Length: 173
Image (cartoon, rainbow, N blue to C red; front, side, top):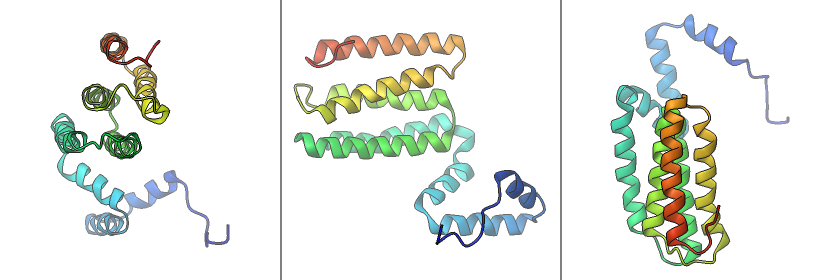
C-alpha cells in the first residue's frame, strides 16, 4: 500500500511494548489517541468513567437515543436514515461495553421502540429489513450466552415476533 509507510506491529507486540511504559507515558498515549478520533474519545470516556457500571451506562444510552426515536420523521426515507444512525450508535456502544447480554438488551430496546414509533403499514423494504436484521442479530448473539440466559432471550424474542406479527402485515416467520 502506497500510504502505509511501515508495517504495523501485531497486537501482541504492542501489548509487550505497553508493559514497558510508565504510568505517565501510558496516560499521554491514551490522551493522544483520544484526540484523533471521536470513537477513540468515546471509548476512553466509557473505560474511564463507566466500565464499572455498564448497566447504568446502557440506561443512559437508551435515554439519549429515545429522543431520536421520538423525533422520527414519518417519511420512510428519512425514517430509515434516522434508524440507521440509531443502530450505528447502538453498535458502537455495544462494542465499547463488550458484554453480549447488554448488547442484546439494547437490540431488544430498539425492536420495542421500532414497533411503537415506526409506521408499521409501510411497504418500504429497507425500513422493514432494519427490523428483521436486528432480530437476526439478537438470535446470533444469543448463541454466545449461557444456556439459562439463552432461554430467557428466546422467550423475549418470541414475544417480539408475536407483537410484530400482530402489528404488521409484512412480518412473518
